[in-house]
Length: 219
Image 1 (cartoon, rainbow, N blue to C red):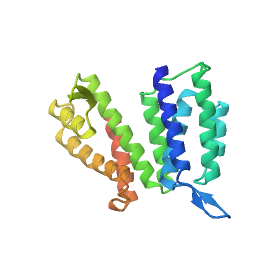
Image 2: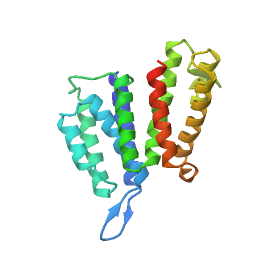
Image 3: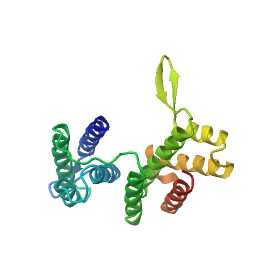
Image 4: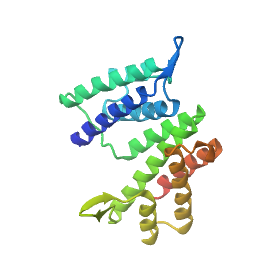
């Protein structure tokens, strides 16, 4: 579990560096890519809330300093994440919650709901899709369905659409759920690949509601 946490924060630091690399603007104001920024913010806050809890200075400072898609906010967010990385590498954590749990799902969906209220449909769609895919993997593990396959002598993770097919074929859920998940994954893929004009915020709201109902019902 410690190794997962270390790897996760390294990924978040790299993500923050990607966000800062999008910096643009003029002498009056500088900004970063909005979609990347809010995905970075959502992922970072969820991670920090799980690992450090809401009363920890790192969580509080990140929430206060990394607020809008401005280059200064992105710089602050990355600096705070690097400070968190030092604490984690140094073994200073006293409590760690399991990262793949109902609690983390709740945190991610709560952040997605917040983004939808702010009209940021694209990062919300990516987050909801990530929750859905992770839930499919958990269902596979629970029902003894392989989530990896061998290709060219090495193991690779199955993609979400294949997990969906495997779960349906084993009668873990019905055809209606199978079709809904196929539609949801298509929307998630459009968001992840920047095809933002191919769906609207109303569809993402339905995506959110559907996934929330599905993961509550099918456990």
